Length: 119
Image 1 (cartoon, rainbow, N blue to C red):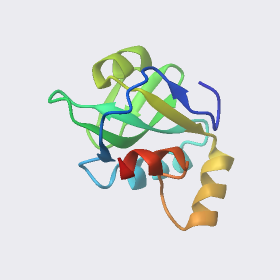
Image 2: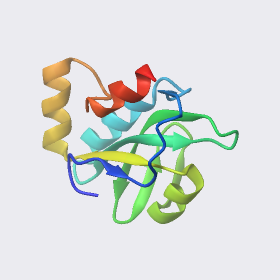
Image 3: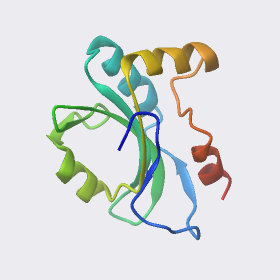
């Protein structure tokens, strides 16, 4: 995964996506990334235990995922496996601030997620 690039783990266009059930994930992950400037802010598609997929936000640093909505810190590999994460967009501190200023929103910012929202 590269900064600002979407990565795809699966190709499944028959699924509907929604925003994170905990609607504050974008706000809390953004604030965590701004406080901890070395973190990467990540937006992605997560699948819960019931098979429901949604757009979610968290932070990553030194191979750890920081999920502020569940107060969870786990190795990235485990976080991606458990969350069955399909697509991600990663933002540096500067990219996150730029996107916030441009949109007046904590996210999601990449237009790819609009397509998922509309399915």
